[in-house]
Amino acid sequence: MPFDRRKFLKQSAVTGAGVAIAGGAGAPAAQAAGAAPARHGHHGHHGHHEKRYSLTVMGTTDLHGHVFNWDYFKNADYSDAAGNAQGLARISTLVNQVRAEKGRRNTLLLDAGDTIQGTPLTYYYAKVDPITAKGGPVHPMAKAMNAIGYDAAALGNHEFNYGIETLRRFEHQLDFPLLGANAVDAKTLKPAFAPYYMKRFHVPGAPPVKVAVLGLTNPGIAIWDKALVQGKLAFEGLEEQAAKWVPRLRSMGADIVVVSAHSGTSGTSSYGDQVPYVENAAANVARQVPGIDAILVGHAHLEIPELRVVNEKSGKTVVLSEPLCFAERLTLFDFELVFTRGRWQVESVKASLKDSRTVADDPRITKLLSKEHAKVVAYVNQVVGRATETLTTVEARYKDAPIIDLITKVQEDVVKAALAGTEYASLPVLAQASPFSRTSEIPAGDVTIRDLSGLYVYDNTLVAKLLTGAQVRAYLEFSAQYYVQTAPGAPVDVDKLTNAADRPDYNYDYVSGLTYDIDIAQPAGSRIKNLSFGGAPLDDAAQFVLAVNNYRANGGGAFPYVAAAKELWSESTEIRTRIAEWVTAKGVLDPKDFASVDWKLTRAGTPVF
Image 1 (cartoon, rainbow, N blue to C red):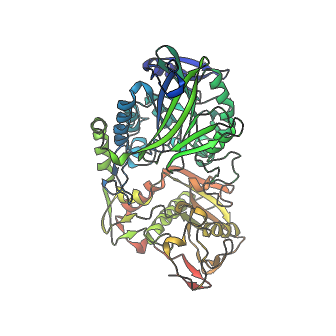
Image 2: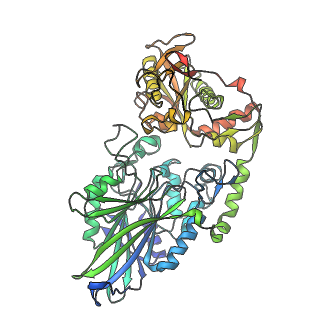
Image 3: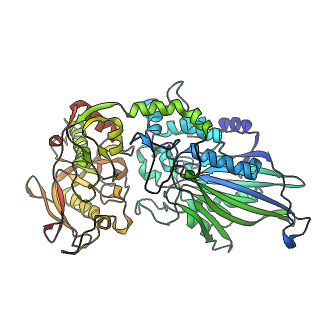
C-alpha cells in the first residue's frame, strides 16, 4: 500500500507547489507558494522597522458527508433544538468572508477528518453509485472541498469504513493531500499517506513564513475497521509520532507547526486496553511534544472554541480548538508573527469559532452539487413496504421497543441463514442492537429507505461470534452500567436515568433471544436478574451465537469477551441494507413478526414502568 508519489507530484504541480522530501523517511510534503503582503506594525515599542505578519488558519472537522443544511432522514431542512445549521455550503460562505477580510494569501484551510461517511449522500457514492466503478463519479465531498479550496485534511477513522480502495479513489480525486503521519504500511512501517504539508507565505522584504501542518489519525481504526485494514495498515500512537515528526518539521525551517488531529482532548479511550495507544490524545500531544503552536482537534464531536495547554518541556502554551461536527462551525486560529533576530517568531495565537447558522449557503456550492443531492433524495424516498403501525425510538433507551426488536430479528434471521448447514447450525442465535437515535420513527403506511436508514444510522456490518452463557451474562451486566442507580420508591426522571458515567446511547445493548430484568436499584455489576433462555434459567456453560455489529465485534465500547470470542461468520453488507431487504421481502412491517418483550427495568423486583 505505498503512498502514491506520482499522484502527489502531479497534485503539487497543479497547486504550483514544489516538493520537499522529509528527513530520511521518503515522506512527501507539498510546499505551495503564495505571496502575501506584509502587515507592517507600528505596534507600540516594537518600533518602525520590525516586520510583522498576520496569518489565519481555518479548520473544520467531522464533516461526515454534510454538504447541505438538509436532513435526508426527515426529508427536510436540518433543524435542531439549538437552531444549528450544517453543511459545507455554509462553511464556504464563512471561508469566503474570512478570505475577503484577511486576504486569501494570508489564510490556510484545513480539516481534521471523518469526511466520506455519515449521510445517505456518502453512502450512495460509496455503495449505490460507487466512486470506485470504472468511469465512476467524483465524490461530492471531493467536489465541494476542492471548490472551497482546502489546503490539507487529516484522515479520520471513518475514512476507512468503505475499504482502502474507496479511500484511495477519494484521495486521488482531491486537489489537496490527505495526511496521516501515524498511518503506516503494516509491513514496511513507512508512511502510507502524506505525513505533513508545508506552505510558504511570502512577505515583501523578509523571508517567507513557512507553515507546516502535521496530520494525525486515530489508532482506533485498527479495532473499528479491523477486517479492512488488518495486515495492510498499522496505526501508531499520536504522541509518539508527533514527537518524531515535529522536530523534523522544525529542522526543515517551519516557523509555525499546526497539527490536524483526528483525536479528541479527553485523554480517554473507548476501547479499553485493546490497543496500547490513546484514542483522544490531542491534549496529550500538546503537553508532551514541544514545538507545536496550535492543534485542530477532531473526532469527539464537541465544540471547543479555545483550549490552552502548557507544554511540559518548553513551558510554552499550545492553542487547541475543535469546531462542532457536520460543518456547523469553522475554527479560526489567528497568528501574529514578528521577524526578529533573523527569524520569524510566533508572538501570539488565539482561537475562535464562526457559526454556520449566521450565513446562507454559497450558491456556487449549491449549483455544483444539486444533481448529486437530487439523486440521493430520490433514492432514500423509495417505498419498500407498508407499516401496520407507527414505530418509534422515543422510549427505546428504557423500555424494550419493537423498533429495536426489528433490528435484532433481522440480524438473527441473517445469521441463522448464514450458519445453516454448518457445525454451528443447531446453536441458538442471540442478537445485539443499540438505541442509536432518540427521534427515529417509522410511520404507519408507506415505509421508505429513508425511514429504515434513520433507524440504523451507522454503516455497520454483521458478525457472528461464539459466546458461553456466562459470557453473555457478563456482557449484559456491562451493558446495564448505562443506567443510573435509582433507589426503590425514588422518583424516576427518564432524562436522568440513562447515560451513567457519560456512556453514549450507542454503547447500550439490547440482547434478543433471552429474557432478563435489569434491577437499577442495584449497583453496577449486579443488576441482571431472572436471566432465562427458553423459559429456564440460563446455563452458564451453554454455547450461543451472538449476531453483533462489526463495531462491537471488534471491541468498540469495550464490551467484555466479544472482541476475543471466536468469529464464526461475517459479511460486508450493511445491517441497514439487510433491514431494507427484510422489509422489502415481507412487504408489510407488522410488529407481530418481530416484536417481543425480552427485558424490563425493575427496582427490587418491581417494574419501573
